[in-house]
Structure formats: structure tokens, C-alpha cells
Image 1 (spheres, rainbow, N blue to C red):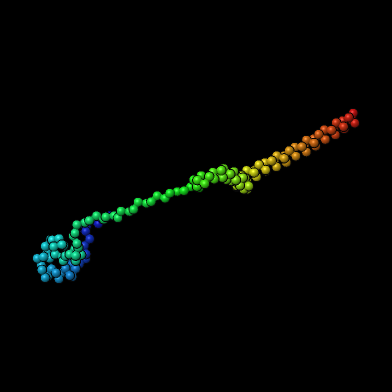
Image 2 (cartoon, rainbow, N blue to C red):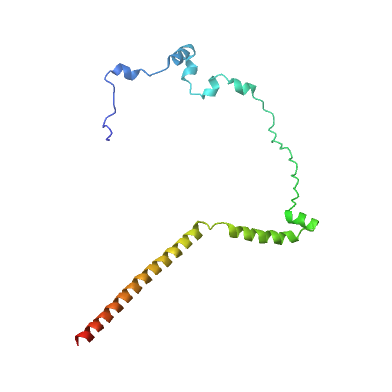
Length: 155
């Protein structure tokens, strides 16, 4: 956008001379004209705010936090400690042996099942390939025998 070469002016010059002033301020200027024209900060002529009168200017005291009691540490009693006191330490080894046997009874997981399946399909494919080779070998051996027999009879 280009800025205009001349400032914008309204079509009626009488509007130019009048300042836009709030009616309340006009009334105030008529009552006390010397104060209305004076350049002064607003706090000199505005009424004091109510909340400033009521505010307490006592010294600021920092918040005192209540001292929290120290946590009592719990004493942990572990199973093997109780077993040692009772003299049942032999059961720990028996329990481990039992867990091993229990794990053996579990079916294989997803990964192990996949390995078993792959191994089975490879063995099956190898067996089928061996069958085909054996059939081809027996067929070719039979054809050789027939050719030899045909040569011997024809000669």
C-alpha cells in the first residue's frame, strides 16, 4: 500500500476545529477550567481507590512450613530368611527343581512353536525331494536296462 501524498481531511472544516471530548469531561472543564487545562497526572485529581485505603501494610512474614515427621522405615522380612530361621533351607533347592520340571511341562511359546514348525516343514520338503530323486533314479536305471536288453537282442 502506498501512503497518500497529503493528509486526509474531512469534507466539512467545522468538524476539524472541534475536538472530540467526552461529555463528562466537558462538564468538568466548565466547572473548574484551570484544572481541566492543566497537564497533571491522573492520581492528582482522581479519588483514591478504596482498596488502597483498606490494605494492611504490615510487614511480610515468610510462610512457616510445618515440620513433617520422618518416615519410619519398614523392616522387610524375606521368605528365605524365615525359612533359614525354621531350618527349612533344604526346601529351596527342591522348589527350584520342581519349578524346572513344571516349566518342562508347559507348551512351547510362540517363538519356539515357529522354530519347530519351520524345522518340520524343511524336513518334510527334504523328504519329498529325496522321494522324487529316488523315483527319477529308479526310472532312469530301468530305462538303461531296457535299452541294453534291446541292444543285446537286436545284435
